[in-house]
Length: 162
Image (cartoon, rainbow, N blue to C red):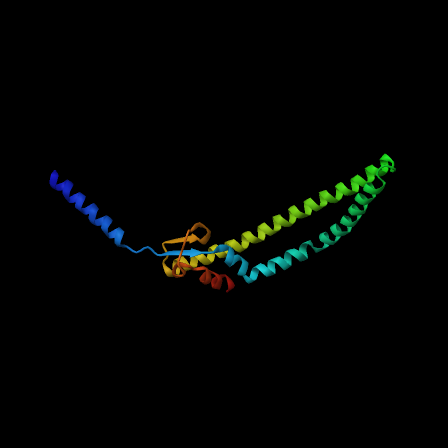
């Protein structure tokens, strides 16, 4: 029985020694850098601007009206009738609601498009992992320090450009 235990113990020790000697290939990627340098990012930005251009122009016109209403309330507030004050306040609150809705819609679309770009980055990382046999890929933001030898940011950027 002691022989079996010692043989098993020796086998386990040899197994762990082999694992400890195996090299682990680690890569680090700066995702934000890749995202900012992607050529698709500029295209997405232009598309979003075009998509929201009409609403932005309308909102600018309504902003002028709201500013005029606020100035009139401030200047003539004591002499205006309550119905006139209500009308001016409604103009201001309508603009604020539309501006908030515009901002939320733009942010939502921007997030959707950024998500698509991040998916492309993830696909590029997967290809590099498969091709170059990486064991572990870390985000640069999650690492305290990493040498340029393990930085795969430029490789990923080249993959997403193609």
